[in-house]
Image (cartoon, rainbow over all chains, first blue to last red; front, side, top):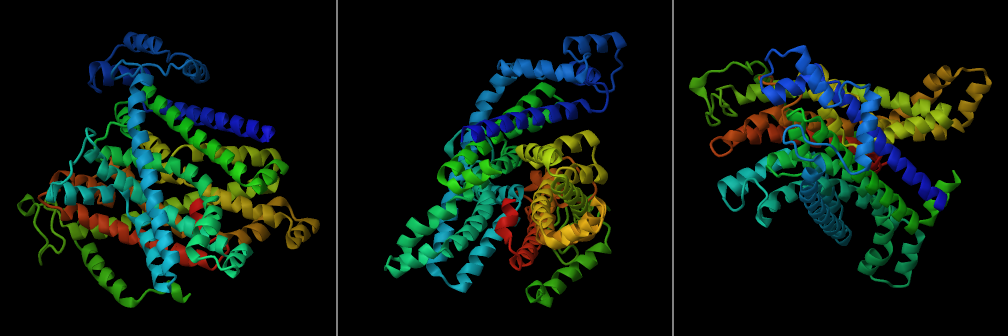
Length: 318
Length: 267
C-alpha cells in the first residue's frame, strides 16, 4: 500500500509539473517577442506603437525573459514552490493573492454544483428503479442524454432570458448574493447530471446482476432496502474515480459559466489573463487548476483503493 | 440496425428548411431588415445586421458538421496510433504515453484548446488543430486497453510467429479488431466536439464573424436577449438537436457492445 501511495503521489506531482511546463512553453509561442508584447500592450497600450530595441531589451531583462526557456521555467517553479507565483502584469499585485479569493468563489460554485447534480442523479435513478417500466427507463435515459447535449452556455442564456430578463426573478450577473448563485449552479449541475445519471445507471445494472441481490430478494428484503443497502453502495464505487475525472470537466464548464454570468472566479481570471496577455496570472491559474485536478484524482484513487481491496491488489500486482 | 433508423418525417421536416436556407446568403446584411421577428419572409427572423437567421443556421450546420468531422478524424487517428503503439511496445513506451494521457487529462480540454486557439489565431484550421490535438486521449485509452488484451490472442501470436513485423501485425490484425470498439466513441465525440466548437465560438476564439457558427451566433445575440430572444434560442436549439442526435447514435452503437454508453463516458 505504501509503495502504491508513493507512486500515485509522484505521478500526481509529475502531472502538475508537465502541465505547467506545457503551458509555459505554449505561452512563449505567442506571436512576437514576449517582451515586445508586454511593452506595447501593457505599458504603451498601443500594439502598433514604435518601440526602441533598448526598451524591449530592458523589459526582457526586467521580466527575466532573456534567459533560456528551461531556466525561466526553473525560476518560476522554484518561486512557485516557495508560494510565490509572481505578480500579475496587468495589476502588479501578487498572483497568489488574486487567485486566493477567486478560487473560493469557484470552489463554492463547483461544490454546490456537484452536490446538486448528485442529488438530482440519485433522485432520477431511484425513480427509474422504483417505476421499473420500460417507458420510464427510456424517459430517464432521454433526460440524461438531453442534459448532456444541452450546451452549458446555451442553457445559461435560456435561463437568463427566462428568469432574469422576462420574469425578472433573479439577477443576470454578478456574485453578490445567494440569488446570484442560483442560475450558474443550475447550469453547471445540469451539465454534470447527465453524465452522472448514465454512469450510475449503468453501474446499477451491473450491481443488480450480482448473485447477492437474488439472495436478498429470496430472503424477502424489500426492493427499496435492496436498493439502498445492496445495489447502491456497489454502484457508487465506479462513480468515485469518475467524479475526480469530472472535476477537470467541471473546471472547463466554469470557464464558460463564469464568463456568461460575470462571476469573478478562477475561470474568468483565466480568460481575462489570456485576453490581457498576462502570462504570470495565466500560468498561476493553470498551476492551481492542475494541482486541484491532480489532488482530486489522487484522493479518488485512495478512496477506491480503500473501499475496494480487489482494485488495490490488482494495481499493486501489475 | 433498426434502432438507428429514425422515422422519415423529422428528417424531412428539418432537411427541407435547411436546404432552403442553404440557397440564401448568410452574410448579406441589410440594416433596413434588422431584428425582424420570425415571419413568412424570414422564417427564423433576422439578426442585428438584418441577416437571415435561417440562412445562417443552415450554413452554420455545414460548417459545424465539417469542422467536427475533421477534428474527430484527427483525434481518432492520433488516439488509435498512440493506444496501439503503447500496447505493442509496452514497458517504457507505454509508461511515457500513459503519462502524456494523464497530463492531458489533468487539464480541461477546453482550456488547452483555448490557449492553442488564441496562439494559432482565429479561423478553421487553428480550431481543428486546437481541438484535434487535445481530443485524442479517450480513443487512446480504449485502443490501448483493447490492444493489450489482443496481444495474448492466438491469431495475433500466430501472425507474429509467422514472421510478421510489428507494423504488419498491428495494421492487419490488431487495428481492424479495435475499430468497431471505437464506433460508439466516435459518435459520442462528434457530439462533444460540436459543443466544444460552439463553446470556443462563444468565448470568441475559433471561428470568427461574419462566418455563421452556432456558438458565435449565441454570443453575438447577448446584447439582444430582451428584444430578440430568437437570436439566441434558434442556434442553441439547433446545437442541442444535433448533439442529442450524435449521442443517441452513440448510445445505440455502444448498446450492442460490451462497453455501453456509461463505459464510453467514463473513459
